[in-house]
Image 1 (cartoon, rainbow, N blue to C red):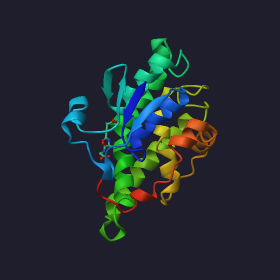
Image 2: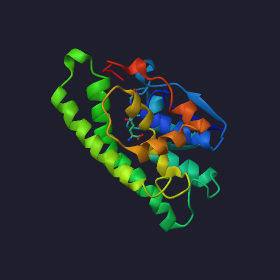
Image 3: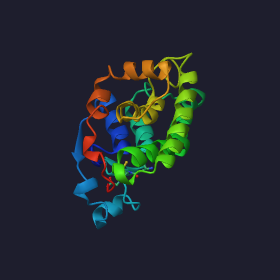
Amino acid sequence: MIKIWGRRSAYNVQKALWTIGELNLPYEHINIGGNVGGLDQADFLAMNPHGRIPVLVDGGFTIWESNSIIRYLCATYSQNHLWAELPTRRSLAERWMDWELATFQPDFLALFWGFYRTPEALRNDQDIQHSSERCQRHFNLLDAHLASQRFLAGDEFTMGDIPIATSLYRYFNMGIQTPEIPNVRRWYDELTKRKAYRENIMIPFDELYGRQTF
Ligand SMILES: N[C@@H](CCC(=O)N[C@@H](CS)C(=O)NCC(=O)O)C(=O)O
């Protein structure tokens, strides 16, 4: 039985839970992190020395880093569906996963923390503007890419969609101005029809509003 550690409101945990849902895998969830704490406990640090969630254990094997967890789950359980065996085809998905981690997520989290998780009186409008503009550039780029295909790696849903699309529900609902991105909207609308997306990503996040601690 797969075990996954991490609070359901955490962006990176949501990616892993969504993947588990897509693959219809039975799992045990251990709520940890945020106001529940526990990430500094010795038994948790023995699994992930970085003290971060998510952590996944499958058959006694431990994995940390959300995108590595997605790759592991899809390679092991998706029967060539979300994970392409052919390296060239798989690279079409993997580039978006790496881009999400290295480029997109730092700007998206700067916006989410600067705007949504900072109490209004403490917000730095200039920083928010800066990260909002950077996010708009990323979303415009995604919009152009999605003009000619249904999903990020082609016309089928793959693991490459998961990391970036995890941000969409919050981006469209956190109360900031978003650019005209009809192709991203169409992609999002399509994802909202997926049960696993609705159950793991489209969940209220107002408990995080104005809360600067994890
Ligand atoms: N690059 C790591 C980042 C892990 C990370 O920073 N996770 C956050 C939640 S999104 C965390 O552990 N926060 C501490 C907490 O929730 O208490 C990954 O993708 O797994």
